[in-house]
Length: 398
Image 1: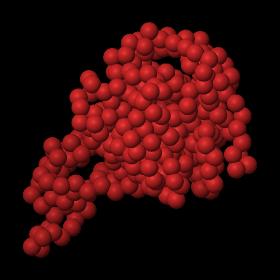
Image 2: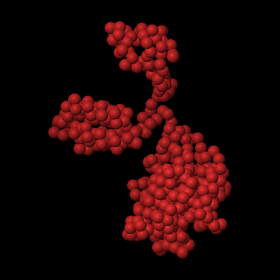
Image 3: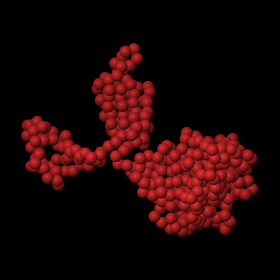
Image 4: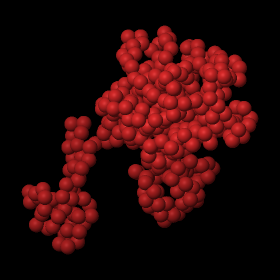
């Protein structure tokens, strides 16, 4: 599974994310040429080599009508330096660009996150929001570029680290505001963030909205095999390297990050539980099993435990509530170690039979498919163990 990990230990902004993701492509210069050919009114981007704290990365500069716009990261601009654009203006610009419908939709969704946050911060309807800090053409360029790049990289999962937002105050169109700025704080609701010891605005509304939109989840770097690493540099210098680091790779085949969903019941029959287990497997559960337990007032009960992927969480929770009598479900994040698996078809005197092969960690195991064994056993009126003995020495791979 292709996985993208974004290390936001120095926050995030649109230009930093653009640079980091662009450097993961086989030909970043070709992307720059293609992006500039979109002809976003007056906008051009350029990539340049940047070195911070001894680390080499890429910085993206945006010019509008030949003038380099002020970098959004770590500071906001006074109101008079910006065009004032509402959602209608943004949608109009994006609708006329030569982009796929998926990318256009992503761009508008990111802007909607920002608009909703600004609406809450200022106490006005979304239709009255004017993007003082993020509605300019340079921000449109950053958001569009990141949406294009995510579409081209197409990771199966995007994991984002806890976001360093900095501390202190920031000057913007409305005055002096605390860090993170109010809109940024609203966007980052339910996202793990921290202030750290760096004074300044490390995560901007644009960066926050892009992370919120594209993140599959937030947390530590998963077990993965890196295939490309890049550094998207910010404009300012700090005592730490000011960058977003992007790592693109494959998840390690021998590990899976899974969820355990479990509940206790004491008023279901064995038939009811069996029916529920079948529905859970149909819904995508990887494992379902029961354990006899003692419950309140010394009543015997059953623990029902389901192993599933994070993507199937909501579906499995709904199935548990629908097909069991539980009124509460517990969730645990867990990691399982699994062997590599494949199935081969063998030609035998008794017909085709499938054999499962599992290997890794210095071991190899083989096992015939039960349905095939039982078919042969029934046809010959012998035991399954006798079928296994018949198959030894007479199988050949087809």
